[in-house]
Image (cartoon, rainbow, N blue to C red; front, side):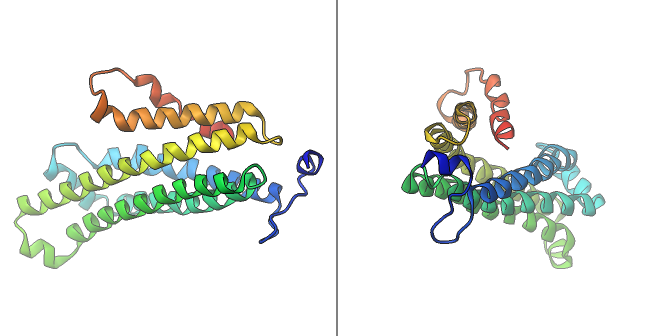
Length: 226
């Protein structure tokens, strides 16, 4: 079994996707995410959204519609790639433990579904600021408040989904360690990344006063795995 795995000739009995093909699909999808996700999350969102300043935020979005749409598409592309990664990693690690590989994929799938639902809040923001009916029905202050509510809902739902994503990474790391065809160090880094995401997500609820700045750097494990 080990020799066959090493030669990358084992195929999934149902869809006949080789391990090398699954790894390639996962790697390319992650590469696309590395471009799309930071663009939306680290460039577009902070550029347009001013925390606790609803009027300024609404003004920024109205003045930069194209940028807002491009950020929305960046998130959408990222979450679509998450679906591809879920499937590809299931195929890649199915020979290790089929049931656990499926569970691992399901945790990422749940995260992706939550993220897509959260993304609808950004669609709502765009409609609120670009539909004449809303502009006439609501007073400016009311409209701006609705915009901020939708933006806050997006962040809340998205961060809740990260909880499932962190569990996915830890299970993925365990499967990688158990495999005989992926370096163990990748599995260790994935578990560390998962713990980092988990601590960051739970910090506001369980230990708000503890400094966990180091956890923000653990995501590099996933990048190295790519």
